[in-house]
Image 1: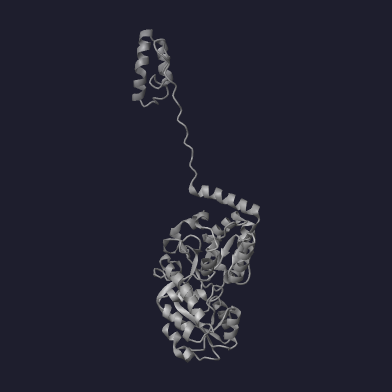
Image 2: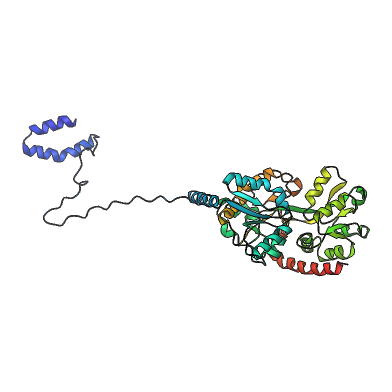
Length: 428
């Protein structure tokens, strides 16, 4: 249509041609033609005239700069941290007895994943901390991360200004998101809630005791049906226990002191009236029970795993569980907290390890690769894995958690003082 009309315009007189050009756009619009085919003067850029100044040129609108999302920003930080840790090349971990035995495969997984050589101490936590503190006193700062019990950290490391506030090192979204943790919060074992981070805990709804089956019958042990029954006069002279210091049995007795089912009177009677035979060596405790030197252990400290293993091998050792009136969680052992040392020689490797260890990936690896795990992660987003059935939290249940309750800290401090006094009185 447009070609035909144009040819006709050329044959019209000038007047009519001009008139038709004025009317034509409206006709085309009415006929459904594309009105943008010929630009109108309204859309044109104004032409400057002699009568006025030029109109200012239009300023182009800048394209918005994309904002990186949180995941992208974290990935950049994470990759940089990995590179820095690999440049340091090494990580050194001071571990208590349980981690040094049970977590070596987990530590190896960290080394394989990130290419950072990792060295973890062996032996008891007490021996490890004795060495570390001696090194630091000599000006040698060789340790980065601690997997040390709450009581050792609280009584020896924090007073020595050895531990850093730990939350400043959290960068992994899995770690910083407190909604992914039991109770929707982070848990700490120190009064200031900043230096001893608790990432797992055992279920504390029963109190385990062990007995030698050659020296006691099941019927005798069956008479112990409650916590008070444990201190019946018939058991005098029949218990073997760990001495109440930070290297052995203090944590168990400190917990008993603040336990609503036991309390100070229970601890006093145990230490002063039950004629318990004490040792500071966990291996000796295991041998005495297994070989029949003594029939009963009431507070196992860190040797419950060894005694269970002996029971599984057919040794005359058996575990029984005394029910509690008040169920709770327990994190006193060295397999539950993690700490960051001051003046760490490999700070980037330490930060990487901390965040990986507490992440969904790290805690899942622990659950799925540590056999007969006697504690459950406080993360709520990982599979239950190999956690022993007796240590699993019930869905929706409420528990006391005295190891992580800052309101209990004054009682814990009182317990340390009073137990020390009673122990001095009890020693021959």
